[in-house]
Amino acid sequence: MTAPASPAPGSATPASPFARYRHIVVEGPIGAGKTTLARRLAQSYGARTVLEEPAQNPFLERFYREGTRYALPTQLFFLFQRITQLRELSQRDLFSESIAADFLLDKDPLFARLTLDDDEMALYQQIFDSLRPQVAQPDLVIYLQAQPETLIDRVRRRGIAMEADISETYLRALVEAYSRFFYHYDTAPLMIVNTEHLNPVDRDEDLELLVRQLADMRGRRGFFSRGE
Image (cartoon, rainbow, N blue to C red; front, side):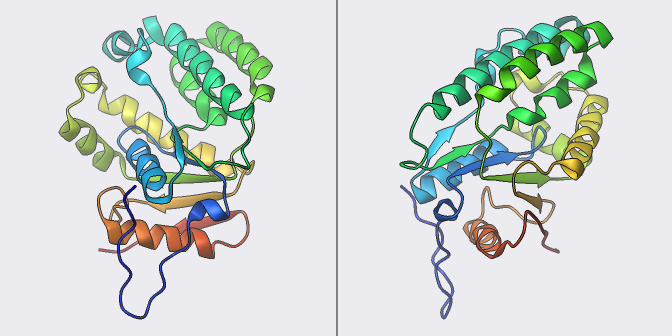
């Protein structure tokens, strides 16, 4: 396991966030860095990861390329995949291990509303509502924010083949949908992190700053941003 950055002289090493929150979810739109941050937290503090597996979805590339034609099977595949992962997690002893995940099940309908027609959405919602009670809620959600232009640039730079056909219009709509969703979200404690000038994914000092913010969080909602 890698350790977090060494503290500056006179400062104390921040305690593991998993000491307070056993099950942490990192969320955010495409390009926000949620998967990498979930991995960093797990590696730094000895937690287990539960991650999205988009490469296993046989419809995803066709959805990015052709849009609504493959929207319903793409959504349903992800829904059943995530339910299976979280059901297995619920059956384990959560008190004996720490979890870092990169998806929040309650957010799944957000994607469906952007891409499905009314009849498809009704079917999807019926299936979602029947499966949702089978999984546990996280202890903390970290929501990574960034401007659409920043996310578009990150997606282009990382060069994942199946993401090459994602339109800027779709990404902008997705960012707005995430913003609306988390504005109203109150099921679990939430830390909103503006990543425009904060990079806990690649910079040890920024990861340490974030962990300190989590340790100091009071109440059920916090916000962390850093100027240039």
